[in-house]
Length: 287
Ligand code: 13P
Image (cartoon, rainbow, N blue to C red):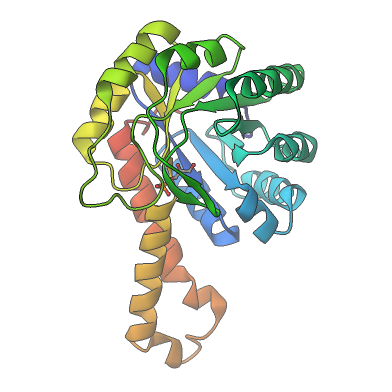
């Protein structure tokens, strides 16, 4: 069932768990994540970056694929199709394409411009029943060529953006995309707690879910994080399983070269890590 992410995240805040956003790259990724959500009776958010949208030949293709797959696979758990780190133009494209949720990432803009564009998009999205995420304090690391410094969001700025009516808010608390460096200082829970105090029950989003230790994830959830984004970890699992298949020479045996066989171990590996994350986030049986 394709829905906005608003209700599922309100429920998550109330129930003190988080819903995973897993980024998709192709048909196999999408299928693996949808099936895992259904098998575990978990709500799920499919994240699509602008780069991944382009790779899959456009947001319309992505929306059509996801909607058809939800039907063909009889997916009854709540599924949100969400633009990840959208530009202003990208948000409008996804709204038109039939996405049920968007993120407007104005974190790199001057706060006044971030506020103006976010307010406009909140109005447009809400008229159409689409949920909208905003970001304050850029998330470090690299994603689709966009490099952020891993800022700690100012809680007062978070409050300003929250008051614009966004449905959930990503606040940088030292989290970064991709693998964490050896000398990473960890998440800034003081900043998270201060933000939570100011914004109340608005769901908070934790980006850069790959490689954050389980105890930090649990503390973050206890402080109001209700959506956790995971991308790199699925890619690493896919890569490792695919490498193993080829290194074992399985592509050279029989019809092992058939793409359906070649991509199967990676697809199964995505299911394993997605289930593990759903267990850690507490979203199993919360559909
Ligand atoms: P990772 O790639 O670090 O898991 O981050 C994903 C993310 O935050 C997508 O917005």
